[in-house]
Amino acid sequence: IGPRWDRIFRIAWRVTSDREEGQDVAQRTCLRLWENLSRFRTGEDLDGWIYRMTVNLALDAIRRRRARPETPMAVVPEPEPFGRGPLDHVLSRELDQALQDVTIDLAPRQKAAFVLVRIEGMEPTEAAAVLGVAPSTVRNHLFQARAAIAAHLTLARRAVRIAGRDFLENQHE
Image (cartoon, rainbow, N blue to C red; front, side, top):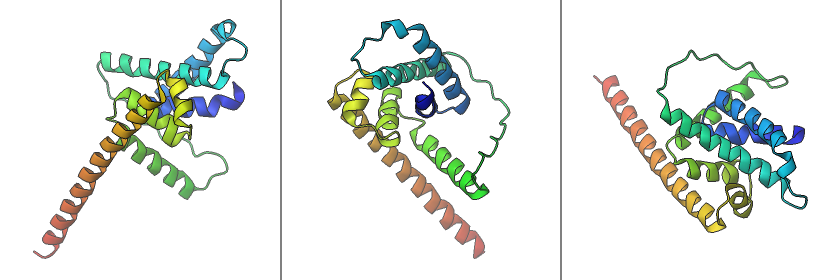
């Protein structure tokens, strides 16, 4: 599991849109893998089995979250990763936040397909095996996800344009 830990965590985090919940899902995945190791058949795709379990547990976490009322918690800043400068840290956080903003409203399966293919770099056939669906279903989820993201970005661009115009008008008063 060691060499796969980072990817397990990234998938769990991106699918759940919550770093702490992603950490919990990644840990649950490792525990579940250990409990079910005897079910793994030699010759089967180990990575596919691991990432399928990760996605399924992340989707379960989303369902549980939707079933319980949300209570706001204080945000604690992440410590700066060792060996990275402050600019790298800020840019990485901004990119992560932008990605969360544009994917937050995607349907869970669309988001899982998007994370696996566009963020983790899997081929649609690999993602299909992980998700337990046909490659055409993955391509359909990707098409829908891209359309939703494009609509989100169009609205955001329009809001920025309006805010900029309002700002300029107020400057001339």
